[in-house]
Length: 53
Image (tube, rainbow, N blue to C red; front, side, top):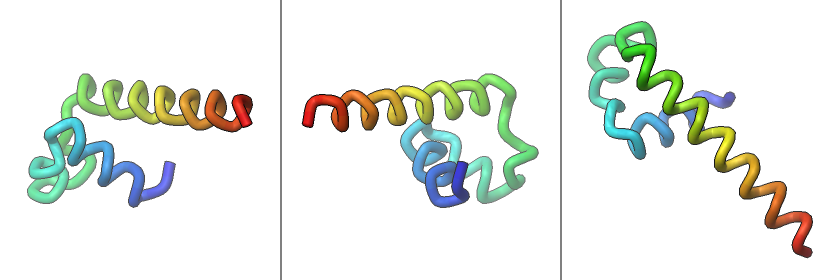
């Protein structure tokens, strides 16, 4: 996952301030899991959009 995507997801999920203060090691395991889950959802949506074309 690119750094830019990780930052965007952290902003969307509401824990980017923690990343800025403490780095990626400062986020909770739950937040990391939610970030991965959201990344998967976005990837699945992109695939679905491509298949409809």
